[in-house]
Length: 186
Image (cartoon, rainbow, N blue to C red; front, side, top):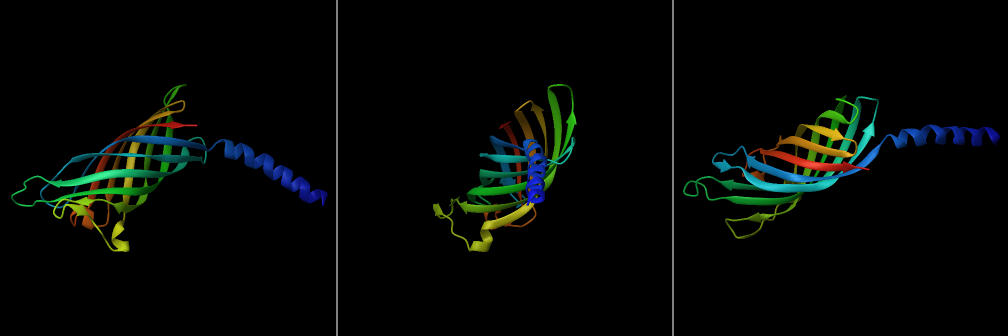
């Protein structure tokens, strides 16, 4: 019995410092999105969400994020293609993050990894109403990468997200989104 209590005690001593290295955070920003389908232009949107920074060692981290995003696709020439799609989505990227210490106060990060996205709802201009899709058509997946600068608890990031799946809300093309944001880790 004493051996089990001693094992639990030492396990907690090891687990608390490891958990103390991990940090929660919040983030938000603006994005510009388009689709690979012909004849579409870049449109502004935004995102807000949270992250969890899991420290593996001094340089490597795993960073899952849960983001609520708004993206639009709009045609350039309304005489050729008159299309507008918007989507409100939940995006879950899981990024591998490499941290480089720049000086005592600043660090740089290079992030890359896969993401999955669920388009919850949106508007389709052609019909002037909310679009409705089969359950499987709400999902897309792809790659996300970017870089960030950290100053103590603050984060400033630039990211790119590319969907590998052609999707209805991207007018049958691949979605592309560039974003800039600010975050805070507790």
